[in-house]
Image (cartoon, rainbow over all chains, first blue to last red; front, side):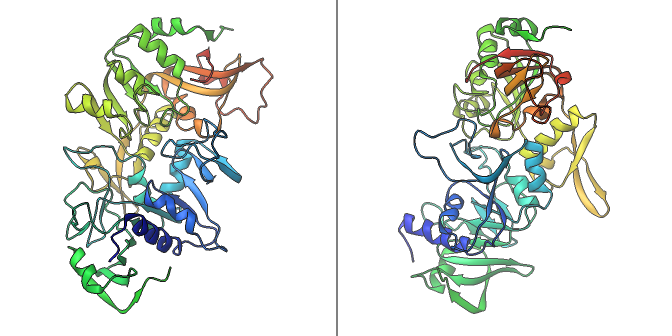
Length: 222
Length: 219
């Protein structure tokens, strides 16, 4: 079991990076999803889409080279790669909702065994709003949840049924944590890989949801 | 032809208490900060604000929130402004949260003469409450109404004296959509050039959509 947080985040980002294909148009959420860009295999080039109206977004600029009109969807200074372009919010969400986005990688507060995701509010506690999350989960060709397996205190984020308000009734496709690579199938959750230094028993203990274990269970190759 | 260039103090004479404002920008990027400063100075109150988010305390729409001039916001995100959340919890501010793509389309529809839009976003979530669901070709959609405003307050990189507007990179966002969706559109521009000084190819909002211009700098 991986307990070091930094290591856990790196494992998740590395594993998700292997799911992306050359030429994909991808939206990476804030937090762990943003790290995915750092671990792409050498021959894989993807185009990053950002809700605020960009395709071809790069990483953070060198200090002193920030452009105040070149930000990411978190409002942080960013860069444009050669070939990038900017557009308005309706066009941006046309790409997201219209089925033109190959993948969206985002975090979750809870995911349940049907593949439903909740990631935009905790009633009475935390109400940031959905931003672009509902459109992303509803419209992207592939929805990849990347998150640590448990909450602070060790409670499972993968539950039988989401108690928090849902982001979408569109099922996610994959759940990637430091401990598990889970595919959401029509029959429910399928554990296909376990994380490094992790046992199946540990994954089962960390997971509240019902889960089938693949006959071909592997350890993540990173 | 009417001169469009005005001073910021003229804005406060135009905007009445209780007005509905569309304000461009994404976390403050592409928000007309000088116009918002003028509204704060004038103390217009009971405003309804439609925008992507409520910015940060003291930046973007956050300026109006901090000054307690707003009674209702219709936005996709308030997570970067703790003051919005505090006023909401204290019952001083009504917050309607809208999926970002839905909001963009509602504004576009408002400006483009449509009654609303059909979107799959929000189906089966709390966003669907009190809304109509309809089926088209076997697919389900939510009916989301067009929105309009009394004023659109937008930000451009460049304008000519006619009011043709050019936007800059990620400062574009909601601005060109809002330009058409209000009774009165006021654009703050970083640069003002003579008529003919903009390539027709780079103009994103035609001048006929713009009623007034404010010469700004960077907020």
